[in-house]
Image 1: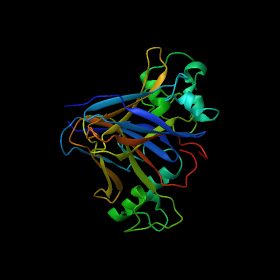
Image 2: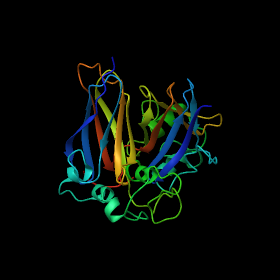
Image 3: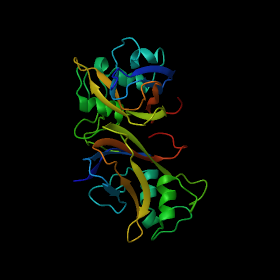
Length: 147
Length: 166
């Protein structure tokens, strides 16, 4: 087994996922943006900024044109890491934050952003090597009113 | 030797939309603490809000007043998690909508966030549950965060993100 992700709330400016790790070292999971039935940011997006970010591949976002994205662009969109690419300083971007719920040791959950083979942005999660449960919030960086 | 004692939660900020507690423990093993919602002595959300009215107060009164689809009375852990962790999995959504997770027309619920401050590890956890009569509680836990000589500390924010202001 591995780590699983289930959405437990989605709002215009935030998605909350519950991550459950069985303890296998190196367990990873990817949240996609292609409209898949599960583990997909677009599927579970309410109308709002998160959906706009999730549709960057088809609609573009600021300086990012529609089409295949790079990892640097995905990091700008989902981690607000604008060091390698910037959609525009006035455009809000996302951030990811963990809240551990249960566990037996230091809960080192790791999150990064990347793209799939077609250039769709993804969020890549690596779970700690111990059983545990954590929430992952995918939300807008500061400046958004409301959840 | 593993020293076990309860985590203490000291109120360090009380606002209309957010409470902040400083969690502290000297335990070198597993430790737990509870924040209640019954109006008991601190740490208790109702008590610690004082005269601050707002969405956090409404959540803390779910047992006596109900909240959204939740009738007054004993709650379940799933409902407590919906209220305090915004974990609406299953049919435990307090929204007036029927859809389990729908994104727009839903009543606001809270989030808890941990910010480890000092210690030898950052293994802090937060969950929601209920006490014997069914009052919601916020349950914190830690695992080997202190060396036994110096308390390990962690900030806990309990807040409603749908709001403007603190």
